[in-house]
Length: 403
Image (cartoon, rainbow, N blue to C red):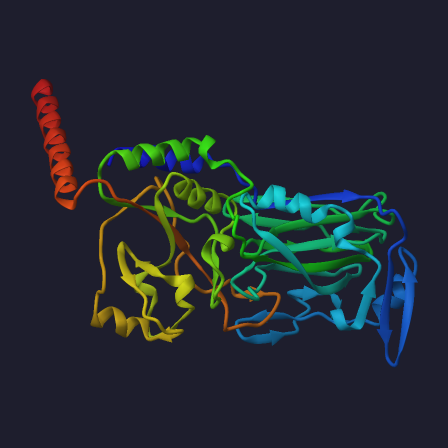
């Protein structure tokens, strides 16, 4: 299908950020009440940071299922949500509204959950890592820098070959609030703090299902939508494959449309708006299965791709995938990949280093499969055969002219 490259080009033109951020001046001093042994203490920022830091404990990180304390990789302090309260009200500053506008093209409801308070003193840092998925509907992370004088400690977020830095320190860092949100599969790191204290609140951002998931963006105005409509009218039967730009957490019952991020959500909803059947599948490399077990929920997996073969997953939470592949191919069809040049991030394991240990949830490559049902299969085969014959005739004519 020659039009697949037009679809691929249209999909690549979709501009969707992987992170966003900003800063603002608080209307009132931010207060923090924290547990110190058997009593509670209260401070009004930027004062009292030394006492707050003394009440914190060393922050850990995860390598697979192991919790690790290694100051050569992460050096920072933390308080758990049960050990402090704050007057900072995330809903009162419009931060969530801006995140929804910039990161979520469809109408998901975004739910923030406070994860931790962290203090980075002079010399502290956190090397590159990916946030451990807490659930399949955890799509992003939000870091809020509270008023506290410091320099250094920039947050660097990477996705593919792109990166963006957020600097919360420097002049006026003691009377402003800075924030940055990014999709949870993005690698990020905290550079070394060179002076003062970097004080942050971190939130995990979850999405909830919505009956009007595609209600915020008019997908029908896009070039991709118009090409989908033309493909539907072509009378062909085919399955178009669009590799997802982001990785997705496995091990959850979350509905796929609400779990899609950025440009992936745009491709999915543009296809649905054009009246086509769209679904998301996990993508695996046949060489990377080994003897490992495939863990995930059927509602997330549906059909999954191994190389270019497509299989129907069993209605089980886990099964021996390598044995399953050897035993029975349930369904197979040719996928017309609309990707141009694309490197799969295959395998299914999340990055080696995360903010929490976990073996229950992990990131996996995914693809959006768009099914076009035109005429009968016989008509579609005849059309494809005719196109092939015409292309061969053109090739022979070109060769003849060259001679």
